[in-house]
Image (cartoon, rainbow, N blue to C red; front, side, top):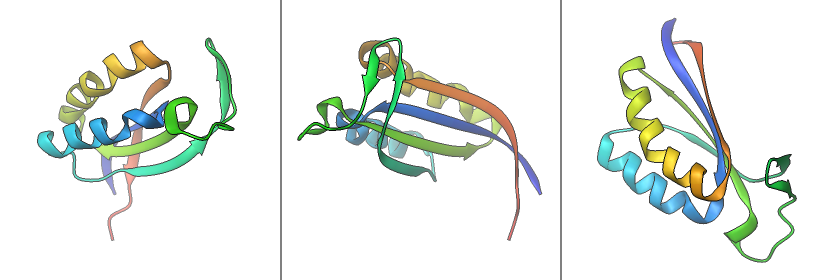
Length: 97
């Protein structure tokens, strides 16, 4: 196993292309996206019942080396600040295969 940091990000779907473009430029090699997640936070219920991505959220999960965490946070922080969302960072173990 390999020690990594796990980032879990929920943010507005309309900004996904911009986030992923910045990930690519910064060398973030892998991530998982679950589209149209729902939940409730400070900005109220986000139920994903809209026709466009403007009011839909997506979940991103990233496992990365500790030295890459701050770089990823700085990519998503302005988007979360503007549109809402959450970014959680935790320790994880990557099972090598």
